[in-house]
Each structure stands twice: as structure tokens, then as C-alpha cells.
Amino acid sequence: MTETGMSESGEYVRITLEDLTGGYLEELNPAIREFEIHRVLKESVADFDALHRCGKRGVPGAARTREIDGELAEGAAHYADSQLIISGQQVMQDWERPIMAEMARVAARARGDVLEIGFGMGISATMLLEEGVRSYTVIEANPEVRERAEQWRARYPGRDIRIVPGRWQDAIGALGRYDGIFFDTYPSTEQEIAEHVLDAPVYAQHFFPTAVEHLVESGVLTYFTVEIDSLSRMHQRILTEYFSRIETTLVTGFRPPADCQYYWADSMVVVAAVR
Ligand SMILES: C[S@@+](CC[C@H](N)C(=O)[O-])C[C@H]1O[C@@H](n2cnc3c(N)ncnc32)[C@H](O)[C@@H]1O
Image (tube, rainbow, N blue to C red; front, side, top):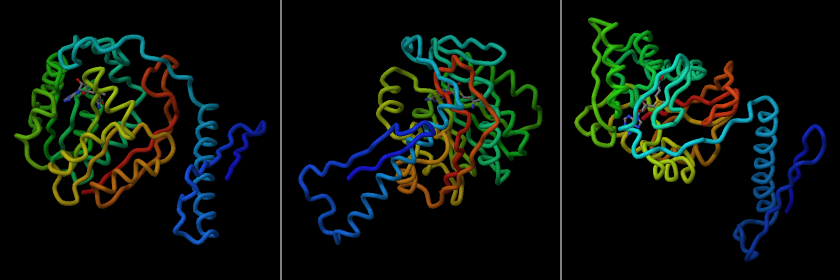
């Protein structure tokens, strides 16, 4: 079975299903089997087509120039106007503001107690406070980033702000439940990049079981999805294992710089995953 997708200039992708044993979906009526297989192939071609169109609009993206030396939690943090570099990694850049703003709206929508994982440049932290949360707690692994967070906190006397040191994996057990959780970390080691970025369907997946344990009933998790225009079905299947409802918003109106090493497209889907 073959499905062919066409770009404006002509054919660019053809997908063929090879049924290795001849038994794929053999329980189904042949007409239904053909319909289902054709639908999946068509969807794959549509995915390639959407990616191709985005490639024409986006920036080329850049490869990482350095591996993480040791652990990100111990690396020196270099703050420039528009980015944060730790251990030679582009950990955060300020073109992400529109994405952070939508994620902050999601995590703060109950105006309740919000937990953020990873302070970074404090862009989302400021947005969460501006959204009017009752309390703001952040777990931050890197000591130099924590110093920044302490300086930032001094700008908000009277607000309930708690800065928890350590990696979330070690620190979160001592914390309670939250109305909203905002998860935006960067892998700490090359091994975590391999496990959670290159080999996992969704980076935040390793946090989902913990998120569910620390959300109140109907509490909401949001995280940096790295999904360009829609959630893949693979991504949705993982979410539905843990959450009762998924809402998505497409954020546009930004453009990563040409040398951005972690994202290349001009849109991203923001998720509200409801417990
Ligand atoms: C992408 S930045 C966060 C950006 C932030 N949302 C902002 O708007 O500026 C990631 C942050 O997560 C921290 N981090 C990475 N791994 C962590 C972990 N396991 N536990 C806690 N913090 C972590 C990093 O030190 C960094 O400050």
C-alpha cells in the first residue's frame, strides 16, 4: 500500500506499508483493514507535508557545539541580555516569551498555588506573578541560577515566593500539591539528553507520573512541548495515560534566531494537561 504526498513543486515523499508477515490487521474485514491502513498512511504524509511547509517558513536551526561538561546543576551560569548559557548549552532564550506567556496563563488559571520547575531567566516566573497566583514555588538545581532567583524575589516583597534548592527529582518529594505546575527544565547530562530527548517521544514524559502526584484534582500541568503545529498521536496517547483532559493552544508570533540549537520553527503547541 502506498500513499504519495505532493509539495507545491511536485512529489517529495512516498510512504509504503510493507506487511512483513501478511497478517497485519488480519482480523478485520478486508475493506475496513484497507480503510484503516490508508488513513494512517495519509496522516503520515500530511505530517510530512506540514513539516515541509514549516521548514519553508522557519529557520534552519543549528547543531549543539558542545556537550554538557559534567552536570548542568553544577555549571557556571552566563546571563546575557537575550539568553542563559550553562555548561556551554543554550538553556533559555528570550524569543520564547510568547510561549512562556501562554504557559503562564495555563499554569496560573486557578490563581492558586503554582509550582515551577526550573527558574532559568525568570521570564515565566515574572509572568506567573503577573497572572496573580496565590503562591509561587520554584525548584531550581543550579546554585548560580538560584542566586538570580533570590535577587528576583527581592523585587516582590509581600508575595508568597518559595525557592527550593536541588534537582526536582530529589526535592519534590517534600512538597505538597499544586493547582498548576509549569515544567521547563533542560537535561542535566548527556545521558539525560540521550534518554529524555533523543529516545523519548516527549521530553516531559519522565515528569508526568510525578506531576500527577503533585497536582490537586483538576490541577493543570503545562510544559515545553517542542510540538510545532499539533500534538502527535504518540504524544496524545502518552498524555491520556496520566491525565483526564488535554487542551491545546497554538502559539505563533515568534522566530528563533538562526543559531538556536534547540528549536527551529515559528510556532509551538502549548498544552494544558488536566489531572
Ligand atoms: C529552560 S530554563 C527555564 C526557563 C524559564 N521558564 C524562563 O522563563 O526563564 C531551565 C532551568 O531548569 C533548571 N534545571 C535543569 N534541570 C533541573 C532539574 N532536574 N531540577 C530543577 N531545575 C532544573 C536549569 O538550571 C534552568 O535554570
